Amino acid sequence: MAIGLWQVEPMGLLPEYIQFPAANLLFRLEHCGEYSQATQHARRSERCVMAEDGSRRLCLLQTGAELRVFGPERGSALHILLLQSFAKLLAGEILPARLREMGQKLGAGDFAVRIGDQRRRWGSCSRRDRQMPKICLNWRGLLLAPILLDQLCLHELCHLVEMNHSPAFHALLAAHNPLERQHERELGLAWKNLPPWAVHHSHFAAGRTR
Image (cartoon, rainbow, N blue to C red):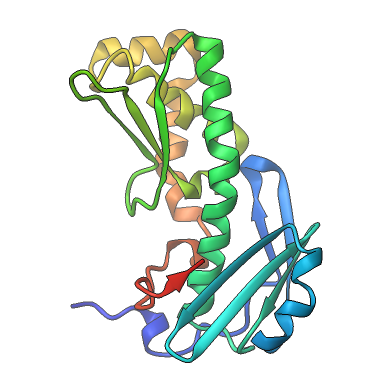
């Protein structure tokens, strides 16, 4: 079994900034003290994410454009889990709304939305007999350029009509976006440009978040 670099040596200090281009959001990341001090700031925070594994605990509080991390200062796999948990929380608030907005414009009808953690796919669409179709978007869609997030949403919405990648499917995509071929290629390459913290799957993946 392959061993990730973060399992061999510390990843170093946390990044100074976290950017989510799809939502035009930029956060400054700062270590602010021990875990026990987080309660003093929690009331002023807009979002709160916690991660723990055994005796190690981390807390992330968002206040405006600042993300304050409380817990061990040195970067670790548990910090990766914390950042990913915050991104998933944010994605759950932003991505479904964007997808439904596009779906309404396209007259897509009713569908369910779920935020996933796929390792190699940006999204998926499924339909079962007598059930509402479901679209699953990878939370990492927040890290895409806005035009590529739109392409991702359009791709999955078109699957509500053509549940395949046939010429008919691409013709439907092209009808809504003449540059769909170019944007599909860029979307396929975008995975390689994701920041390291967003693609690592740490050995703390089973740790508790809340």
